[in-house]
Length: 416
Image 1 (cartoon, rainbow, N blue to C red):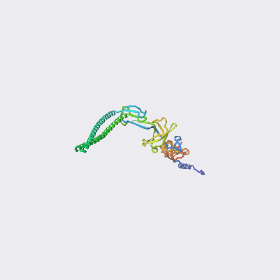
Image 2 (tube, rainbow, N blue to C red):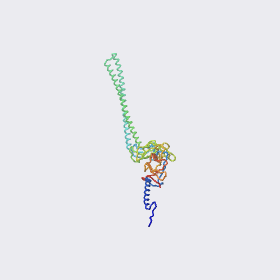
Image 3 (tube, helix red, strand yellow):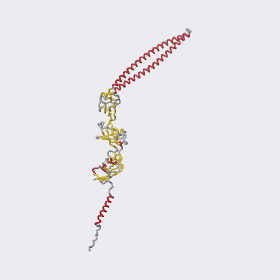
Image 4 (cartoon, one colour):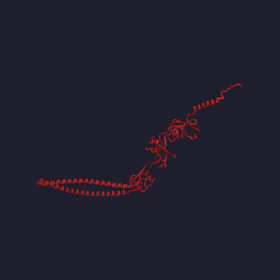
């Protein structure tokens, strides 16, 4: 009879499958408990740009592009209308004050001058006739006054003689009274003649003055018409360069029509366009500078134009020191416009990440350098080189600054 041999092994073969299943379950639980919950994106390290966060001086400036323009521009308008007869000076040529640029012709003005001259001649002849007539009248009054004065003397003498005779009783009273009345009449006649002479003199002076005033106005009017003829010669009002001339021979030009412009080259300014994002920070009096060869040239904001067009506004900058040699209208300079004083700050180099995150978060490398994790930060001012970090980063940390579009919504980036 066979004897049953007892299996003394701790683990029976039939138990291995349960052990394996249990071990798998335990391992799965451990992996689940200790797994990294962050979604991960794997990328080659040389495919991204990594920079250090550093402590340094933050220069608050922006880079703008400006063009050299004349400090002032004089617009050339037609003072008088007419037909273009000659173009004497062409665009780009240098001008001196008074140089003739264009010559116009206007037949209506010629006719107006002839009419004005004829009216002036007629008025002058009439004034001469009036003066002659008044002189003759004056002589007649003088003659009458002379006759009256002589008559007064005669009658006065007769009156005085008859008065003595009447006193002595040598003549009748009637004869005395007649002599007295004739004398008083002569006195009254002379007084009236003197009054007439005075009034006539006043009237003559007023009339002559009025005629002379009218004649003077006609002469001035004729002078203005001649000046209008002179205005048909379009002249340069200042020294400068003829920048534009919009007039061709035979073209009809209306009064006040814009013909061109003259650039005053005594000095220059720079006209720059700036993104509207900075419109509240850019103001008159800010300083700027640019480098050319080995020299640095300083500028100052002279004027800020309020209009915003296509997301940009314009400022005028003037030189506060020497001008560059061989400066020319239309030259382009790359200018650094200072918006504030330098300040010690935590600096993060600029990069493409800002377009994806708006500066609200970045991927910061672990100390091991094998991966980077997402971290919220706060960015303040910025210049063409750096962002000013206000919170979320420490000096010496490394940050991925290249674009984040390839990372999607992952919160962790590991390097292959």
